[in-house]
Length: 160
Image (cartoon, rainbow, N blue to C red; front, side):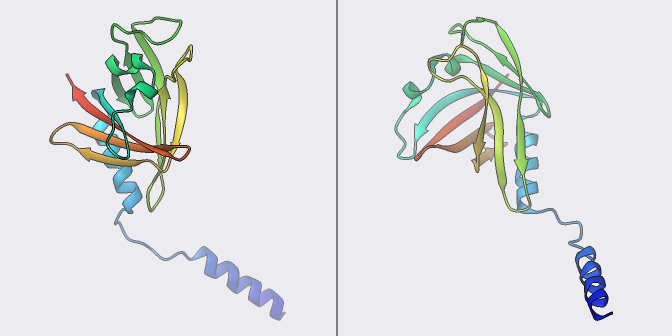
């Protein structure tokens, strides 16, 4: 009987979560801020730098530097390729998907189409624990991410 009572109390305790109210968590707020900044807008890459501020765009496929990234809606992105086409397809426009994942505390991942140097096609890449700096007034987003032990920042600038 004691065992059944202890199990019953444990079930009640775990099923009665404390109401957190209507305040959103920091991770949720940041994720929504990023979505608001990108959805319905077009961006181009202005620069790619290392953590010490050095230009490292040469480490990445040069064709991404003149592309326009249009975040059509939540989950859909259209890449308008500039004069320097990426990959074998040589398409003017490439459709893909993007996603942002966040939990209560932070933005935990972002998935975007990415064209790696020497690749033939865009591939979806996931960057874990990215850091974002969003300035809605100036239309800039800085995405900071790690590849191995190196940290890079991509500055995206809103275009018309």
